[in-house]
Image (tube, rainbow, N blue to C red):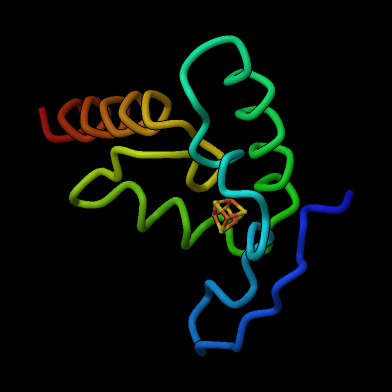
Length: 96
Ligand code: SF4
């Protein structure tokens, strides 16, 4: 799938250099509200599914602070927030 790598960027030495979304259409990762958002979300997630740095990306997006915008690590903000709640709940249960 072509994701628009028209503008090569210099390496920075960080894991972001290997990001599958590098050079992709940012509108996919920051979808608009409304009818077109679902296909944008699915397209972004498809790119994330092939990304070699999904783990550090998601770890960074989980914060703190929890990244409130866009698709990061293959998850929307709502999905990241729910994941954080599940992790916090599991941690509380382990400590009880
Ligand atoms: S996991 Fe998704 S948002 Fe994160 S770097 Fe990879 S492609 Fe980009």
